[in-house]
Length: 199
Picture 1 (cartoon, rainbow, N blue to C red):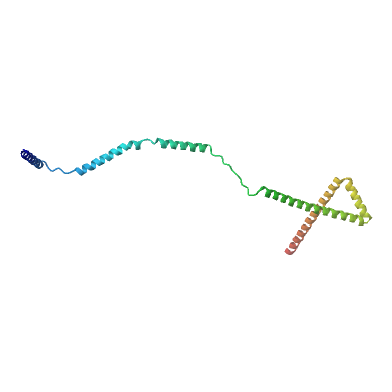
Picture 2 (cartoon, rainbow, N blue to C red):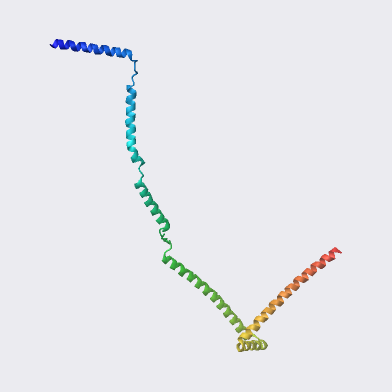
């Protein structure tokens, strides 16, 4: 029975093979697109994964916007209320040096004042000795004049000082007029010489 079964199976397979060859002859040859189909399937799967990731990419960045808003608020508050700047002055000159400098200046000023007052005192002493010398060595007329001048000065000091100041001013005015007259005379002489030459 096995053989019979085997023979029937072989016969059936031969019949199927013949029908397939007949069908292949009848239908035109179909090109093989299996490689292209594989490529399309891989591309379709890539597009599906990309589309599945799109909602995450298109999602609004709430966290980043919140961070940006906080930074802007901090910057605005800093601009509205800038930090107070504390200015510290560091002086290179210390207090003892300043005190020493001031004391040195006071010493210089006091020395200058003492020198000036000493020279004034020397002038007064010299004038006193000259006056006393004139008083002792003068003849009777000059001595009487000195005594009367002393008594005038002692009796009315402000008026005496005013008179002396007026006399000095008058002498200076007269001296200036004399100098001016002398200059005018020189100019006149020069003009006379020019006039004499031009004749």
